Length: 404
Image 1 (spheres, rainbow, N blue to C red):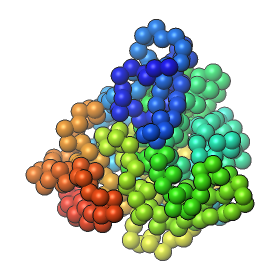
Image 2 (spheres, rainbow, N blue to C red; image 1 turned 45 degrees about the vertical axis):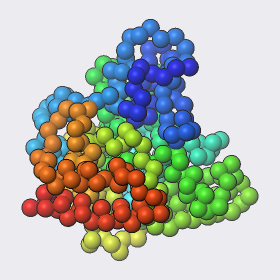
Image 3 (cartoon, rainbow, N blue to C red; image 1 turned 90 degrees about the vertical axis):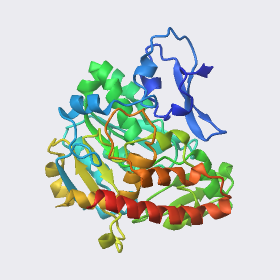
Image 4 (cartoon, one colour; image 1 turned 60 degrees about the vertical axis):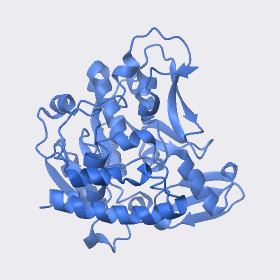
């Protein structure tokens, strides 16, 4: 087997190329050294170039795709195109408590299925046979939607499931991170079948995806051998949630939300994530995020920030199943301000992979980019303290730039 094209570290591991290869010669495999997925050619290749045409890793033309999706370029370069913003949660307490933050993605998908508005949804669960690996699939029942609830903090080649959408007629929703949505939108440019069959694009706001090495790091902290893991859930148990690991020997272990501060969320970022300009899943129809706001610091069950970009009537239609309140866009920006600054300024210094316009970068932005923690050789035992100080500096600068 050989690598697809000459993508290298630009690969996001989204799986779009594997689904779209006309010869079905591309497969996604885990590179265990780097802890990420990579596409490999396992069969014939006639050099048609489809894999590179749909690849979001080599670049995303936001100007072109915004015009195709929304018919206009965004006025707000932090939020992207949008119509309304909401804060919401499912009225099903069990679903709400077991999901990542409010259960709104799962609740909306269940609503779409039960109303006959879709025949299936592209979602991800952890593989029961290989519990530390994700399994993208097309959910066709509410119980399968519930099975997929909750974030998966590991690499996910979600778009491999586009192959089933291409093969089986119907109406579908897709759920993915910004890179997955980028891949779907690029694939839709060359595939009329996908354009017609995918009717809803639900995007998950994302700073980065931790590599598989991050999960190994957490299991080591718990004293668990990866081979002894029976199941793992990265979120759930209320908000902001806990890591839940069940072992083959019957032990049930929990790590409280503070596991993010252990370095899990900071020290295991794939190289490609440091080039991404899209935190808010700007090319989705609806984006979903955690509401990191001071006024919600006592929230225990979970609520969801929603950015409605195209009005499909979903929010209004699911009102009876959810508690939904309008919220100002400035509140959404406030809740995501650190990651927005990193995506729009620090990661984009000298990056031409995203053809769009970014806020002005001044000398302080350049200095902050220069002292970015991963650019410095700092011992791991000091890295977390340095990152805490760095985040304070970035947040203060972001507030000055974005919330005037």
